[in-house]
Length: 573
Ligand code: FES
Image 1 (cartoon, rainbow, N blue to C red):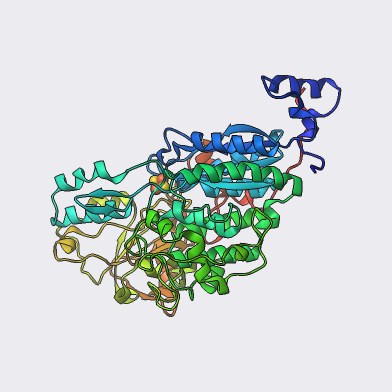
Image 2: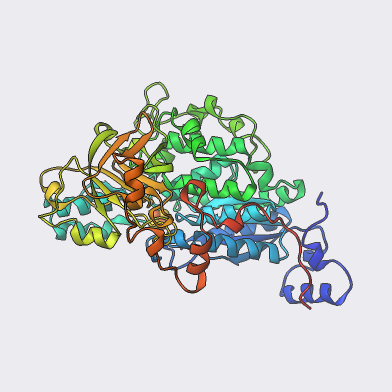
């Protein structure tokens, strides 16, 4: 039985405003659409022709709509800001908070009792969850699903991962540039998002581990008929959730965030999940810190043999039993209390979940990698923390001492990295600054810097790289990211000089450079530090630069931390 609906503040009554709200919406809706018993459900839809990974979501929305009708609700398609990871400049991350803010305001401003959140490409599920958490009305995620596996010359192609790999092989001269370009036609085989364990796949699994999808939904391929059937089921479910008053804050608790961290570790998920989980938790007022990622995730074995850490792709994970089969392997590590959108705890879904292919989902007792997760490093190079994904790194480089080769921007790096006279060896540490949230602005995915051509030609395929940037979840290498504070906020990264000795000790969780405090104080500011940074003069970039927080707290805007709730505002007429 439905209790008082939020939408009743628009539709109930006999006054002029209730008349206006109802009359303009009728347009063929059933007579009882606004009788106070039928929840009004918005399908927050990130479909866009400029977000190729989400292009199919209008079809998905139709299935959700059918489910909402079948459940007794009234569905509405609500197009929301969409972000195509490969298309948007300077980086989709600059716009994640804008998308989340716009979504939040539209969710609150409209006569909505429940939300179905349709996402896929990297930033879309994080933005949707941040917005839903801020408004805190019943909400459920429909993950748009990965694409099918494409092949090139008989070999499976991993979206993103193989772009990085093949482009480096072309630079090394082991394949021609023509061969590299030929693979372009085969990279994207079907609708859906990247098929590696990149950020989109990771965030779909994060949504499921948080309890925000129908259990078993994440990882369902976009082209699989079961995606539409689960979308229909989700439409029915949201009507029940409204009746039960089951809100995001009931589902996303500190313990469910810890479960999500464990899930990310077990699948070898993207480093981008760190900034997204911190930002979502911030919207709920949950005390989640960078250290929680290390404490909860670093002793978890990697079980998913998926690119970029392993071999296979998302279609294979689904075939091998899917996310629930994988999570059932680490069930004992998960917190048992957190419920899902169904009201039933996640762990209750982790029984009788066989693994059908142990080359894809490794058994707990013989994992792909022990104790991986995401390691948090601290030291005089990153006093507030930096992160590394050991599963994607070269084990021999996890303890390393070498001289810095510093680049002040990505343009500086591109201009010099292939210079035959660049003073660099395989032992050097590449340092890139000016790429943090404030400095770029927007914290682009450039942390997996290309290696110097002359080293590639010598057979070098990995080096220690450090930056205040992010990297694509599809990327790999011994790459230290999210150094905080960033250079543009006056962090120590701004004061490193080429030739400084850098010390990396992942086991000891430290990252430092050989400079005394006195020497550091005496060093002059660099163009990448805040004194020389010219803030944008207007628009979103101005707002962003003035208010963005550092990576160690999720890179949200400072005034968006905490929820504003679902308060119904005043009338406009
Ligand atoms: Fe959209 Fe990878 S570019 S998920």
